Amino acid sequence: MPTQDHRKPFWEKLKASNPELFTGTSPEPHYFDVNIKGLSHIKIRLNLYSRESDYKVNGVQSISLVISAPKLEIINNLFEQDCSSIKNDCVIIRYKNANINQPIPEDESQWQPYIDWFVKYTQKLKDLLESWK
Image (cartoon, rainbow, N blue to C red):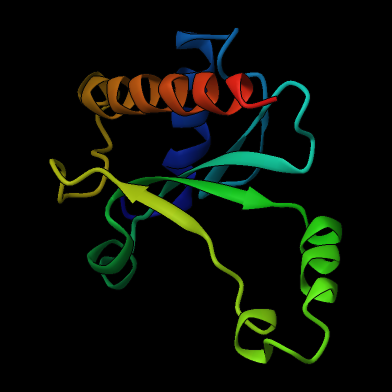
């Protein structure tokens, strides 16, 4: 996938594959946010990386947990000056697909393994997070 032009159609196909699971949005071409019912301050973020420098570090596709900026500010304020190393870090929990090491192909007929991985692990993570409410 040499350009961002292929990612938006991928997100549309992913969303169509399971509309109940993928109820979120794709604000940027490289990621798609999945909302978690009852936990508006946390999102599951699905990422696709197309530049080699990015996917060598992050994997071709990954799932992350993202905390909203206002909640992160509240968490950071808890530490005041006592834990500056924690206060200044933003920890993102990221899981990458270790089985795929090439960017998503341009040919839409080859997208199914990428879709299957997102469906499987997004559903598991969403179920787990919703069970903690």
